[in-house]
Amino acid sequence: MPIIFDLTDVEPANVTVRVSEMAEMMAMLHCIAEPGHHLELSRDLKAIDAEISAQLRRTMHSFSPLWARFRFRALMPLNTSAYQSFGSELATVEALPLEAFVQMSVQAIIGGRSDRPWDILNDSGDRAEFLEACRARSEAREELGARLALNPEHFRHILTAFLWTFYETCFRARWESGSARLKASEIEVQRRLAGGSASMVLASLTPGAHYFPQTAQVAYDKLQNAFVNGSGRKFVLVPSILTKPHVVVKYDDAYSGYNVPIIVQFPISDMGTVNKSIHEIQNQMAVLADSARLELCRHLVNEYCTTSDLSRRLGIGAPQVSRHLRKLREAELLESVRDGKMVKHRLRMNVIYSIGYEFLTRIVK
Image 1 (tube, rainbow, N blue to C red):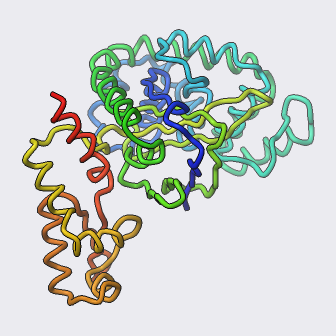
Image 2 (tube, one colour):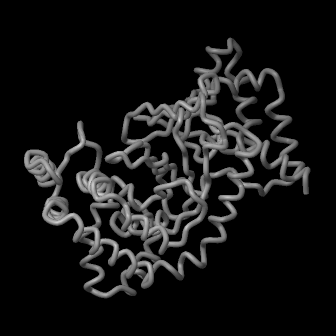
Image 3 (cartoon, rainbow, N blue to C red):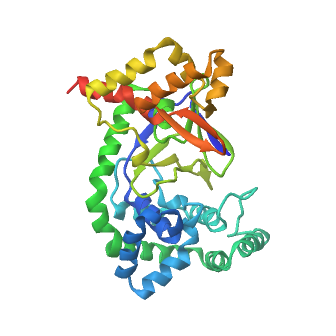
């Protein structure tokens, strides 16, 4: 199921790129809550577990529904301002109107969007429906939902106190050692925005994105299904070291009248990076410039195709298709996956998007 953004009227000026300590710390908390999704971090997660007290661990686990599945919107950038320190971001959460904070909490605790907003502050029926939805999911969600419904302001106070303590205990030092990589990614995406369309840039953040140039639409493969009109909206792109393999997308536009930007938190390891020589870039451009191969590429942009599919569509023999595919693969422009007995192919769109940026970077040095 995809989240599709219509970016027809979205200019690069409406897109902000910024690192966020708060969002990256939530990515760490997600990894702790769902270690099976992040086996490559098992050593780091064990080290974190050894650093925290039993009380802090219990508090962390009690709040884990906020980031285990449907990431808590309040812990991502709430505005389009430039970089804010962790303390400033936390202060923004503390100053968030209570109604907006509660609505964001409700979504995170039940692990998704309800058919309609639940006003658990003022409507006893909505409150009961919310608690029943929590109960149907897990005891942990039921317990956390009951705490929110009983005293939302106290809930926020305990949560923000935990976040500050966890930041000081576990996260600050790790942020200081990794923030330079995130800042470099921020600068790279800003460079892309300065030289291209917003839709191309959003599609270049991950190979899992599908770009439809005719309609300026970008689709992200997610366990959600939505069509979002970007007209009049602001976007904030947040690079992350820890969120891989996820691309986190938050597109709700208002919580009790508190407008927030669309968030795309993307793993920097999935981006095309500026690390090729000018000769490698020239070779990739030459491979793509062949007219017959270019026609084949049109079919490999937004879907996986088998060799026989391409042969039938183009009206040429399978051996000729295989030769073109080999050229693309040798130039690191093609990804191939096995599906049962079939092998399917698709262009590595993050690499394709990066060629122009890499070429420009090399020639202006």
